[in-house]
Structures are given as structure tokens and as C-alpha cells.
Length: 122
Picture: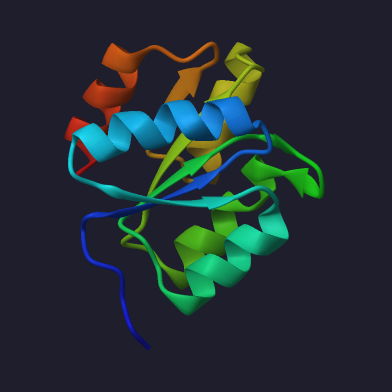
């Protein structure tokens, strides 16, 4: 199995504007963003070549990103997970961390918060 270098980050979000925003931030930091819009596509991408960082939305067309976290952590424990979601309740945040998220950011996204999270995780 071929592994992605540290410079590859998988973004899983069904909102294209979020993908473009995150992609632009990552490219300025010399990372290579890869995109998926569903959990199914994310699983295929990770199984093919695990990234160093997974930026994961929660509400996706085929399920909840939070339910995908255990799969990633069990099969690819070195992959860091940054959860980004508009659903920023204390229980959502706690559940994300309990399932294995490494960092949690609420939407709307902020360039400084994204940069801080990436710097801390990688």
C-alpha cells in the first residue's frame, strides 16, 4: 500500500465553497488538498492512500462524519482528524472527541483557526 506524504490532506465536505476555502488555505501552506464529498468517497480515498490529516464535516449526504471517525482511527491510527461542522453544541463536540477527533472547529470557518489547527496537528 502506498502512503501519502505529510503534505497530503483529505477534505471531506459536501459544500463546494468550504472545499475551495480549505483548499486555498492548504495550498498557501504547501499542502496538497484532496477532496471527497461523501463518507463513501472518503473511505475509498483513505483506503487507497491514507492522508496525514482528515478534515471532516459532520453532516454529509450519506451519513454523519462523526460515525466515520472510529473507522479511520481503528484502521489508520496515525491519521489526525480535524472535525469542522456547523453543529457546534457541547454534546457534538464531546461526542467528536470521544470518538477520536483530534481537533474541532465550528463553521463558519476562520482562516486563522484553520491555520492554528493544522499547525498543531501536523
